[in-house]
Length: 85
Image (cartoon, rainbow, N blue to C red; front, side, top):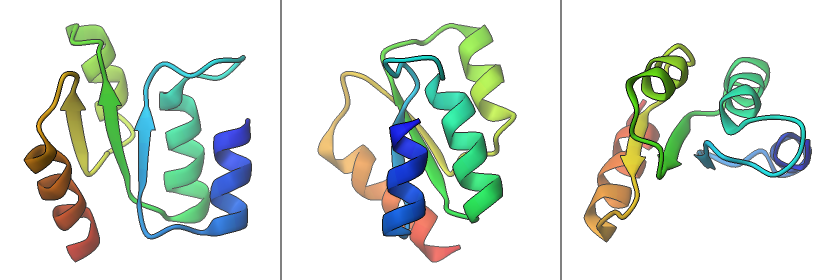
């Protein structure tokens, strides 16, 4: 998936990942590969607020979970937390 390829190429300090990605892989699956394979912290961003999605995403041990619509401060707080680790 393109998200994984970009993470491998750029090696960012943190990834903000939408749970709903176009293509064959969900953001949760991509985040798991990025987090585990590249040891890059992931923050989820999503419009999905159901328990099943949250629990599935939580299994990847993200550094944050931000629901849309969101406030700028939520992104700043999640980034700050992820970058401190």
